[in-house]
Amino acid sequence: MEAPLEEIEFLARSTNRVEVLRSLASGPRTRRDLAAATGASQATLGRILEDFTDRSWVRREDGGYVATATGTLVADGIGDLVRVLETEAKLRDVVAYLPTAELSFDLRRLADAAVVVPTRTRPSAPLQRVLGEMADAERLRAFSHTLNEQSLSVAHERVTAGEGRFEAVLPASAIEALAVDDRLWEKLRALARSEDAALRVREEDIPLAVTITDEMVTLLVRDDGGILRASIHTDDPVVHEWAEGTFTRYWDSAEPFDPASFDR
Image 1: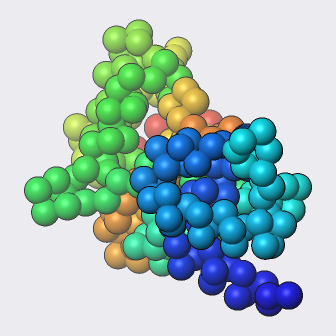
Image 2: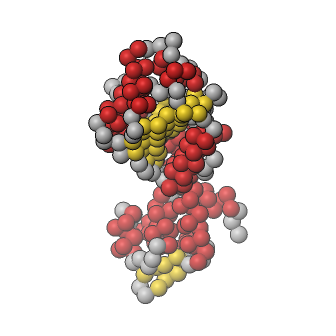
Image 3: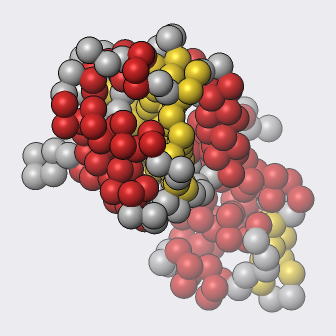
């Protein structure tokens, strides 16, 4: 009997082996079906099917092949591993900046997430993606350690035009930063006066920057110097539930925004 790591190595040495096993786990296939799905030659498929038959992972059935119960088990396991490694590769360049202590969901829930990073030609790509989602949202919620000028402007425009609702929880330090700029301060005050907006303030910091735009959750990832390194966008229901719950927790621990408390 092969050791488990040797079996993993056996599968990993050939993309065709993985593809053939996963294909057979989804239902019976002829050699022609497998050749069309993988692009492998008949000779290669013959060797793969022989190896799989020796391991009792597949059996012949009605002129074709199908995975056995244990073959399906292996296919599911290798599929999970591939998905994990795909997610890891997606997050590899930003994991150092992820506030993982605050993320109570399994990172595998980010398998289908879009990770947007700055580039030389599009240094503001992460923020622009977020602003685009905000501009289309009927309901926008945020809990964040800061509120930048562009996000404030989009929220202000949506609310004053009667096109959306905005709710946010911010730390006092974020409000103070806006209060020193007369133009931004007036936008924030006007936003707070609207019936379609509600702002709350916490004395304590918020170690995250998250927006919930309808069903989409976006996490802004910054380094210790405050530089935006990426935005992560997902409509995964588990992540959405986490974001909803975290927003509610911060909201319940905050006080309604009173501009007079920050007026200079």
